[in-house]
Amino acid sequence: MAFSEQELFCQNGICHIGIADGLTRDMDIEEIRARMKERNYNQGDLANLLGIDPTAVSKRLTGKRAFKHSEMLKVEAWLGYEGGDPELPAANVRMIPIIGLVAAGTMKEAVQQSMGDMPVPASTPPGAVALRVDGDSMDMEIEDGGTVIVDRDDRTLFPGRLYVIVNGEGEATFKQFESEPARLVPRSTNPSHSTIFIGDGTTFKVFGRVTALHRLR
Image (cartoon, rainbow, N blue to C red; front, side, top):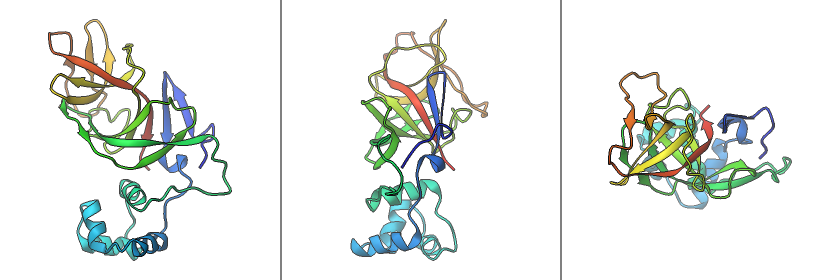
């Protein structure tokens, strides 16, 4: 797996990486079927993993319907697939954990669950983790279902930067920080999302700064 200069575009402290370009390749259907057989998994197990009907799983495993990229990421993690191509250099890539979901909307209880690992450039900060985006309040930056890379060691707030913020009740959100007054601003095409003001006595802490956005296909 390798990231080229064209595939990794950084601006204003945030790197934009296309998942389809950042990974060498997805698993093919025969590979999925073979690994499922090795592990004694059946189509019902796969349906439960993806939260879809077994009939829909059958269509995917027979090639009648393609896996969504978000589904493929789950399948690869489930089957222990790293997607490496031995002909491509791996020295500039390492793996980080996907630790759960983060709301891109109102403050919502943080969902922490292991969702496998993902490849990132080796230059990614050592304390970084990945979170899947749940919601559309930041869809001008990244779509619902995309993945953000968060540097947990970078917690100093600067206007215009993106952060994951947690309140005193353990609820989290992914937003852009702005100052004067201090606030968390949505970056959305959906007008229903509103600014969250901080500094009114409510306890907030910075989980970390978003340093990269991994978009879906």
